[in-house]
Image (tube, rainbow, N blue to C red):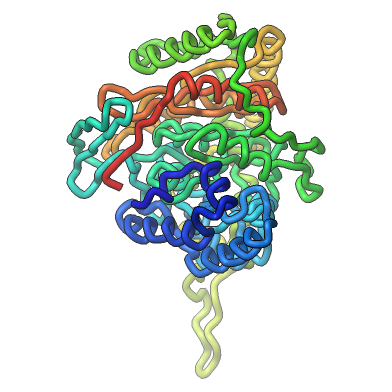
Length: 523
């Protein structure tokens, strides 16, 4: 791996402008690393080498003339949930085999307009449904904190004079989900920026598992147009990066009103990078008592307490708060999200694009005549049976059930009322505080061999991220510490709606205090 692969977005931007290296050199360095390890890590579903080099040449020409966008010449990886014109877009599902959209999503178009270089499409949980990246039709992604080939993980800490420890594992580690491929790409040095989406924690949880930064903006900050839909009232695009500054830069590129998305907020986009002062003096940081469940991991609790103490030492005031309806958040989410998924995924029928599985002929051909196919309904059934994975089918069935006659009021309507109460808890809390500090996930990355007793146990990975999503608020995960096994743990900051400035600035201040410099090796 070259030094170019370890630079931050901001350092790459400044280096390109100072002509220390070219956009083509940057692209080639990252493509070389992708091609070296992708067969083993399974981070990318599609690698767009030719397109990347063509785009890099255009960027170099612009930079030579002193022109270019905010991220001109910077390599970017895209979660394979964003539609990219003429490039395979699968949502990690068999049912979208061969689908190449004739249009570009709004967010990716903004990135290309700002000078970003497309490296390829990253792996994910199928249709973004999962917290491990184990549900992808294309196979799981391996967390770069694991040296998979030998079954060992060597963790190198820059904070400890490059001392390293060797940890033996029985199976590879998951990168988290659903944006696991994007998180793994950034952590492994395959790109400085990756696009993700967050419905219930799908940016923040993998960021925590991979020791990087991931932010979910306020619902409506980024356009959803051209993103393959999971749950339309929850889905939101966001960046995964190496540090908070890079996340701020990317948000300025990605955000903005879009007339093609009725949920897009008609608000101006601040220069988030300029607002990173690191000054949190006088800021009130809330600590919700409901985020301390029984049996909470002691190392995560210690990290949380340390994060609060560091903010206090930086001049912030720590305030105990209550979010009383938090205990209902997971149950609410796993009614609302599957209901919306059931509706959104009804469009995949094998008629217009993607996979089509024809049924056996229902009528034998007459002598010398043409064979006649089975019914249209049979084609729908066979296509969906073959095209959707088990987790997607499970959520479609749950969603269809809670929306069905006789159950709508008991489940979906009630869940929407509880969702309002959860949002109201946050509104009241933000009358007292400027931001809320919590852990990002209840554990570090777990192994491929982890076998939950039932699906609900796996859903508990989202226990700290789902409430923020239900309320539509901005949330960021930053690396907080290493656990006893040398694996990263994340801290989450939640802010008021459309107050990404405060979330980013408090996260920036905390990031400086924590000074997390540890990176995975063996990737």
